[in-house]
Image (cartoon, rainbow, N blue to C red):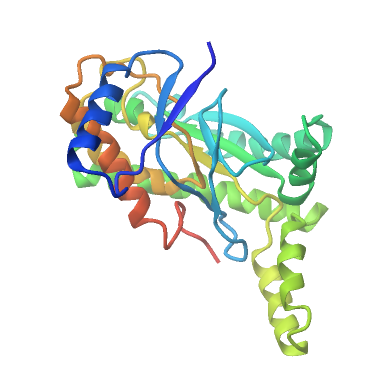
Length: 288
């Protein structure tokens, strides 16, 4: 059976009664395998010189929301697998695996046969990686932390910062070795006739911020819950971690059969509010 995606905009100008009926119907379909609910969102870049993009397509295999015709190398890493028994993360081991993800993903862009010429061009232009960073809820459960505590969220955000800085550093190093993604050169053509001073400023910005890959990380909001467990609403407070990714997936490996219609809608309302609050800065803090 073909997958079905419902794109829900909580701010759409519809009557409350209409919205209530839609959410009730989606709640009833919440465990029908080919049916998924997604939200309007943007794909961002950790490079401040590249613009955000509207994600208008969903990749059925990963439920990743992407620009139409874009080419992605998907990978995933579970941060909870790098935890010691006391919950501390083996940072050196995690760093090595993250760097390998960037290296292998970069090579796959050169060896993958894409389905269309549009995707082949996008692969050359943007060299997009979708490194899914997972296991956040599993890590919280392993540590015995309270997912409602601000300290728990702060600790996870610190780990997310480590993940992001590691990936950025490796992509930046590859840009120096092999060349940055051509999307930066395309963006630079817009100021080609703006005078020598502007061109020099742009080149300095490229030298300081160029990456090999336009996008690096992705995350599913469902990953704030412990995997393969009944999802508890108290984990909702970890949803701001979504801002630690360039792209969003709605891949789910948790049980929500016990959720009420209110909890179901409340989850997506919370996700939508976080996405909208992050639109100005992007889903990931851009490091210059």
